Amino acid sequence: MMSDKQAKKDAGWNFDNSYSRLPNFFYSKINPTPVSSPRLVKLNAPLGATLGLDEEVLQSSESLAIFAGNLIPGGALPLAQAYAGHQFGTFNMLGDGRTHLLGEQLTPQGERVDIQLKGSGKTPYSRYLDGRAGLGPMLREYIMSEAMFALGIPTTRSLAVVTTGESFLRDTEQQGAILTRVAASHIRFATFQYASHFGTVDELQALADYTLTRHFPEADVAENRYLALLQEVITRQAQLIANWQLVGFVHGVMNTDNIAISGETIDYGPCAFLDAYDPATVFSTRDTEGRYAFGKQPEIAAWNLTRFAETLLPLLHDDQKQGAQLIADAIAQFSEQYRANWLTGMRSKLGIFHEESEDESLIEGLLLLMQTYRADYTNTFRALTLDKPEDTLMYDKLDFRQWFELWQARLSRQQGTKAYSHQLMRNHNPAIIPRNHRVEEALTSAVNQGDYRVMERLLRVLTNPFAYSSEQVDYASPAELTACPYRTFCGT
Picture (cartoon, rainbow, N blue to C red):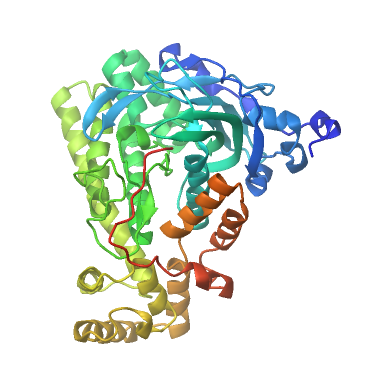
């Protein structure tokens, strides 16, 4: 139970509101819509500690009211951000339709992070929706974002999930919930598109200057500051997308409003992880044409970066043609950086710690075999890491045995111990991922039965995906094959 004594202690909130000092063109000041009977169902105490927040107080009635949007903490200034971007290739006016940025927490480590409520009610950008979110999608974001964090991939994180005591209607009646999200910022590619499309050059420049100061201070002193901004964003996206591909993560909805300038993974909607390796894999029910298929994610990232770069054109050079050339040259670097990051990561997954010209064909050869035989992506690398090739579906195939011999010969040419190569593989091949059927199992138990124990066990084993512990073995198996492929919905 939450006591009055707990509520009187200071939780440790230390808000600033630098985003509100941008031109008010970029946001609308608006409070969350209060809810009737909130209940805390999940608290991320370790994350709270890194933010400088007191775990005991975070479980108080006062903190519950904050997480529910019923109470504004001292120093916070709630607002909804405006943005406009491409959704499945079509440009739309968008904005925070069901989220409220409370402000920026200044942490004991000197970091500045956004604290945002998601599912907290209508805003001026809600259009026809009610501003609410369902319990299942909010718990999915909690699980997936924490799994990505444990995998070492830049991501927003989840501090808390509360139920609202209210239901709302989508396709079916759903339990209402609010997620408290923590992010380096919520500046998106679409924020720049909004400024470029609807704002003045001065407003665009204000946003660019703010972004440089907040995220890329080292680039702020470059000769061409805005070109340096573009280059920094490209570098972070090249690393992020390579990380996604290396672990088999499918974002599912890479619209420009779902891409963060900071280089964090954001907006866990119809996301999922590969079981059988297939570049054409799509999980989202909305992506009927495969625009955001797993294998297309690098291509879409380049497309999105081009849309972002176009917004900077007035700032890059007084001569439009020369500015356009700067953009073309910068975007060309993305594919090179992405490929280099991906190849480095794939070498590590195979225990290779120096380069040879044949490495790319060796890597592509394994992926082709995995695709041909519908081999599980994570478990193939897991088996190789454990030196148990017999655990793969391909073990009895002649072409896999030929590939295996080539790989062993490649490893034998390295000047280094087998133990070092093995440790390199363990450090880059997770023993487990948030398997889609395990995530659904956890959500079903929590949403339908009010039983969070399945989710808690899943989160516990995902905390250290590289542990290769006995507890993780049961969570490593893919789902049984069915006639119906796994599908996700864009509910977050």
